Length: 102
Image (tube, rainbow, N blue to C red; front, side, top):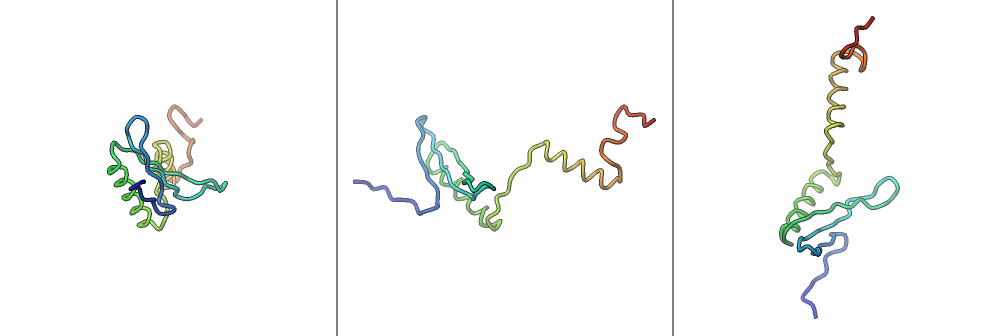
């Protein structure tokens, strides 16, 4: 009854979806409210999902357990504008397009 082996505690779960694709999920920490933060991986085969999960774990350990998040375009542009304003010494919103200043 069962050649299946259990995965180690805390190493996530892998399952096949109804549409035939595979998914893997793992807990990567908790948020401010104490709820678990879950990272999900999707792929066409179990092997592909395991590979993605393993690569993420390597990156996670390389970064001392901190999850590197990608910024949205809006956040990136806000950071760029703030840095530009700091360098030029001007305040944001003063003297924009179509503002005569008088």
